[in-house]
Length: 189
Image 1 (cartoon, rainbow, N blue to C red):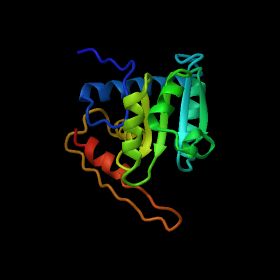
Image 2 (image 1 turned 180 degrees about the vertical axis):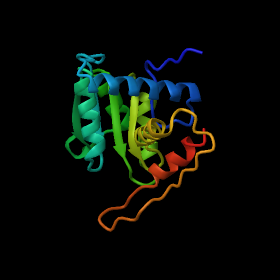
Image 3 (image 1 turned 30 degrees about the vertical axis):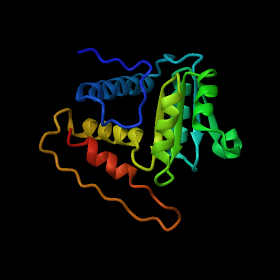
Image 4 (image 1 turned 90 degrees about the vertical axis):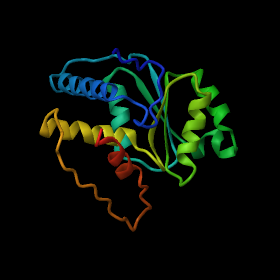
């Protein structure tokens, strides 16, 4: 079976096959190896990714910006309060406008009972791939990075491996359950 990713959204891995997930990890490991060797990998040369943040982000934002730069593309760091979203622009209009200007839309919206619905609404009207950088239900980028790290450490065959999932409370901000939930959904596969 050939894996086809062109034009595909990444909001959750629930609808992805094991082979597709394995392919994503294999490609990521190869890109990581090439980066470590100093090889230029401009597979996304002159491509634009619009990143819309409804919350603050350090690791996700910077890792995506670095990845786009390393792959020859450019990431636009957008915050919802500085877009027409703040004035009530619909997800449909946002999707249509950004679809005409770039090659991908990535969104982080963790507002409870809103985030995943909003990202799916953007995806419904977008002509380009939509990536969830985390919502109130899923965090596909974090969970695939976690699985990749586990495979790097323990190898490809993870059958029988026991993984404990723990989630700590933070007094400074509400932490969505999207990370442990995504781990619980993906790891057994």
